[in-house]
Image (cartoon, rainbow, N blue to C red):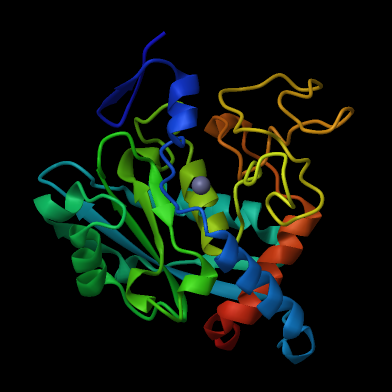
Length: 277
Ligand SMILES: [Zn+2]
C-alpha cells in the first residue's frame, strides 16, 4: 500500500523505513566512531561527573505563511516527552516562551540536510549552542522528518549544532503515524550521542551500546512483541520499542541502561558547556 509522508509518496511504509524513516542524521564514518570511542576511553579519569542537568531548549519555528505555526501546547508536550525519555540520565529540559522565535522564510522552510539554507538559517537563528539545545522546526525537503548533529561535531562546527524536526511531527501535528513528538525525542537522542539501534547491522559492535540486541535493519510500523524480527542472534529480540529504532511514534518508549550511560559519557566529554548551567 502506498505510504505518503511530508509531501512524498513511498511504495510502502517499509520502503519509507528503508529510505531512513525520514531521519537524515549522518551515519558517522568508521574512523570517526573509533576516534570518539578512544577519546572517551582515554579521558575517563578527567571527566566532570554530574548528578543532574537542566538543558535549556530554544525553539526556532521557521514558517511559510500559515505553515509551520506551532502552538504553545505542542512545545509544552514536546518538552514533557523529552523529560520522560531522558529522565534516566537525570536530564531535565526546559524552555521559556520568551525565547521562542518565529521566522517567516520560504527558502529556509523547505531546507534539506547539509544545504546552504540550513547553514544560513542556523547562522542567523541559533545561539549559545554550547550551553543550550537549538530546536528548529520547518517543512523540510519532502520525505524528511528530521536530523541532528552529534555531540562530537559541536567543537568543529558549533553553528550547525542542534536538531531539525518536521513541524507536523510535533505532538498533535498531522504527520501520522509520526505525529506524537517522537521524531523530536529520536533526534535529541542523536544530539546526545546515540546511534540507531541497527547501526552496523550484525557486524562489529553495532550501535556501541551492549544491551540493545543487534538487528540487521530498522524495524518499522508497530511490530508485534515477542518475535525476534530481524535480531542477529538466535534467542534475542530486536529492540522494537526503542527511541533510536524507526518504529511508529506510538511504539517508541524505551532507552536502555547502556544508552543512558552513553548519553552521560557524551555530555561529560563533548557537551561540557551544559554542566555549567
Ligand atoms: Zn535517526
